[in-house]
Image (cartoon, rainbow, N blue to C red; front, side, top):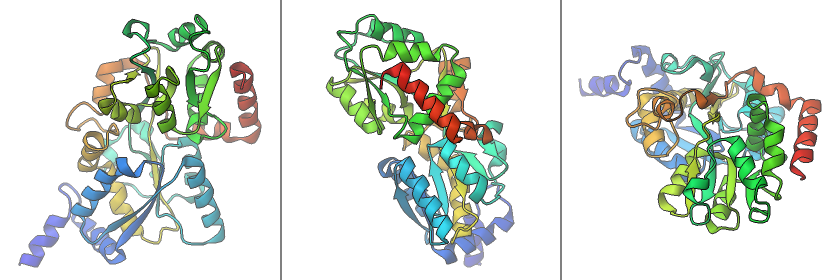
Length: 349
C-alpha cells in the first residue's frame, strides 16, 4: 500500500493519472540535458526545485550565449551526435528557427494556463514575461532626468552630447542574437525608430554582447545610460546595487519570453516532458518569478512578478513578442544585412 501511495503522490495535482508513465520513464532515463542561455546562477533555484520534486531525475545544464547555443545545437543535429534534449533560449528568433526543423510536438499539460501568443503549434513555448528596460546610473543621472519614453531617451542624449560622449550603451546587433531581435522588434513597433537610433547615438554609442557588461559599466559610471536591457537581469542587479537604476518605457515596452522546445531527437524524451511541464507549471513559474527573478508568463503566480503584475505597472505599453514564425522574417540573409546596414548608418557604428 505504501508504494501505491508514493506513486499516487508523484503525479502533480490536476494532471491525468496516465502522467505516471512519463514520470516512471523519466526516472529510468535518469536525466535531462538542457541547452540554455539563462545564467546558471539564475537557473539554479529552478533546477534544484525540479530535482527535489522528481528525485532521481538530474538536470545536466549547459549555459551558453545565444550564438554558441544555436551553432552547437545545429551542428550536432546535422551530424547526428548527442545533443541537448531541451533548448531554452532568450534569442526568440534563432530558437524559433531551430524549432521549425527540430522541435517535438508535445501538448504540455499546462497549455491552458498560457497566453495564446506564447504557444506555437504545441512545439515551442514562451516561458517568461520580461520587458526590455532602460538602465541609468543613479549617482550621475538625476531622477527628474530619467527618460520615460524612447523619444525622451534620444532627446536627453542628443541635447547634451558633451555629457553623454561615449556614455550610452546597448547590444551589438551583430554579436548578440538577443540584441538583433530586440532591435528588429523596435523597428516593427516604433514608427520613429530611426530617429530614436540617430538621437540616442549622437554622442557615440558603446555596444556590448552581454547584459552583464552593460550593467557593470553603467553602475561604475563608465556609461550613464543603456537601453534594451533585459528587465529581469536589471532588477536582480539593482536589488544589490544602489548605483543602478531601472526605468520601464511607457510608450512601448518590448516583452521577451525565453522560448523552450523539446528536440525530436531527445535522448531522454520523458525527462524532457517532465522538465517542460515543470517550467510551465504554477510551481515552476513561482520559483522562476520569486527566486530566479524571471517574470512569469502566467497570471496565477504569488506576488506581482507575472503578466498581471507587469500589466498593472505598464498596461497597454506592453508589447509581448509572439512565439511564432513572424520571428523568422529578419533571419532572411538579405533582410538581415539590410537591417544591419541601416542600424550602422543611424548609429554611426
